[in-house]
Image (tube, rainbow, N blue to C red; front, side):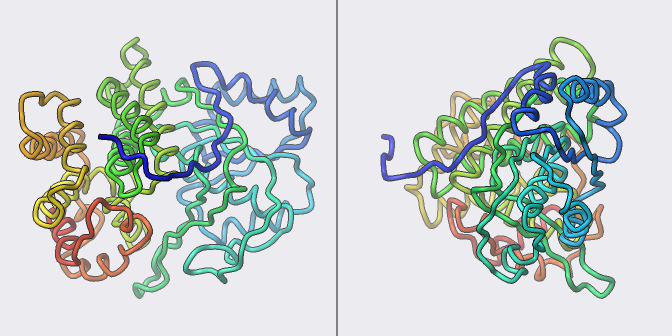
Length: 402
C-alpha cells in the first residue's frame, strides 16, 4: 500500500530534453540578455563541432560571451578567483556545459557573481555558516555526461584535496533554492564522445542515485514513480550506452542514461540519498577517487550491508521489497523478496566486475584509512539511508572494496 504521508517537492528547472536540443541554447541565453559567461571543461566540448555551432548561434543572436574553463573538481579557491576576476562584467546569465564538476562550478559562480562574495561564506560545515540571500544570476545547465544529475539540483559541490600531512581535505556543498538552474538542456548527442570507462562510472552514479532515493527514508509516491522510470531507463540502456559508438542501440542507450541521470538528480534533490553517497564524500576529499567510481565500486557492498541490517533491525521496512522489485526489473522474477534482494547484490557485483570499476586500493586506500573514512561519512546522505548503520557496518563496506 502506498504511503501518502505529507511531502514537498522543491524547485525544478525548465527541461529541454532530446537529441539536437543544444541548438536551442542561443535562444535560451538571449531570453535573459546579451552577455553570458559560459563555463566548460578543458577539452571535449570546446574541441567538438557543437562548440563551433554554438558560437555561430551566439553571433546570430548578438550575444557577447566570456568562456571560463574548469579542469577537475572545482575548489572554493578557484570559484572565488573566477568571481573576483569577472564580478564587474555585468553578465546577464551563466551557462555550464560539461560534467557534474563543471555544472556545479557554474552554479556556484552564478550564485556569487552579483555580490562578489566568497563561497566560503556559505559552504556547509567548513564555511562561515552565513545564510545565502542572493541574488543569483539566471543559470542554464547543459550536461555532457550522464551521471550526477546536477542539472536538476540546488547543490554546488566543491572539493579541497587533503594536504601533504593529511589535513584540510573536504567535499562540501554550497546549496540554495536560488541556485537551481532556470533551464536544463539535456542533449544525448553531447555524450557520444564520452570514453567507455567514464560512461560506466557516471552510469553507476546515476543508477546509485536512483536506487538510493528509491529506498530513502524520505521517499514518497511521486519520487518513487520518478525513480522507477529512471531505473527502467537504466535497465534498458546502460550497457548499450557503455558499448559506445554511433549505432542506433548506442544512441538510444545514451538517451536512456541521459534521462536516468536527470531523474536521479530530481529524486535526490527531493528525498536524499544513502550510505554510498555518505562514503563518496570522504572518498572524494581524502583520496583522488572520481565520484562515479566511488559510487560504482561500493554500491553492491553497501546494498549488501543495508539488506543485512534491515533484516536484523527493520524487517518490516519497505526498502526490502523495493530492493526486490529492482532485482525483478533487472531480470529476477521468480524469487521472494529477500531472495530477490540478495540476487540484486549478486547482479551489482557482476556489473562492478564487468565494467572494470576499480577497487579503492587503486587510489591508495589502505586498512589504516578506514577509521578516518568512517568518521567523515556521517553526513546528510547517511541520514536518509533506509537503516542507520553502525561504524562497524560502514567500515565493512570499505574493507570489502579495498
